[in-house]
Image (tube, rainbow, N blue to C red; front, side, top):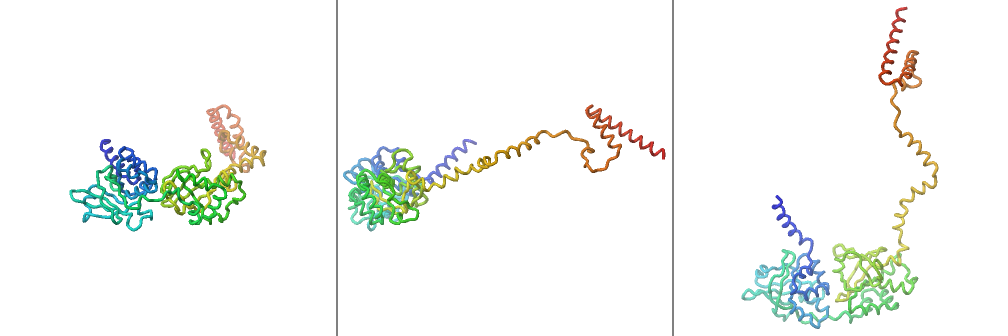
Length: 429
């Protein structure tokens, strides 16, 4: 029986595993010939975009081809190329060779960014003579210079990893400007975050953020309405050091776009973090909605202002208020928990004497009950009794210590005596 159940269990696990998602970098870790491609998936966070898709085909490049593509290119340009190599459909060798009419256009991750002009975010797949399957960008003038080499991994019909011989590019794809050259103040003001930008400039934190843009920066910029919302603390009451900490709390020292936030678990350290559990927050995601929970308030990630590796600028609906600075004021939540057990001790202190006195007699009454008495003793006080009955009761009580048998014999004798007395009485009449 066990030998029959094990194969069925294995088949069930294989069947349900695609529904639980896939991890492209973990898959490629087992193939060192794609290590360069895999490393750029992690650096650009394209891996998170791939893992969030239910159906996807990854066109991977061997190390030599990927190194040639990435040479002297910005991470933003490489990210565009990796997105163009990610097809939003499932293709295995059979489907590649059975394309209707021998050619088709399929959409890519690059098309979903909104930065692809025309149909440049599509890839052309064409069957050529001799069974060769070629790939090219859909942009005008693109050539079928890349071809299918082999299958790396298949998870029907969710994930397919295929090796191709050369990159798929078109003019302008790799020319994305470096994020370090972006004017952060101008970006924030254009996105409706002028108040936040002014605080960054006046506090000197703007320079800190600009110097971090080369290595990695994610900025959560509250919009202007967030500073006018009811209950917002008066930031002018903060010291200069506290204001700097608050502004740094709105930034991460890493490139973490919205797609990566969705897969984040646990709490995230910010640029204000000085140790474990200090000035961090957690991410709550549901579908495409992402919110940041500081412990004091929750703020929704509203829009993406800039997403150019290694910099990401996102807008949020509310200020991010760290509990280390603002936890004292909005902390009514812990108070009820602390006061919950207090009513019982308070009542005991107000009336310590009556409580034990009222309970002591009850404890004594819980002792074992007295032995049962005859029915005559349990009779109500006002019930009629004959003189003979009283005598019988008194004599019964007197002989009770003699034991059960002796008492029973005495009672029988008394009953016989009473019977004789009644007989004598009637005979004299």
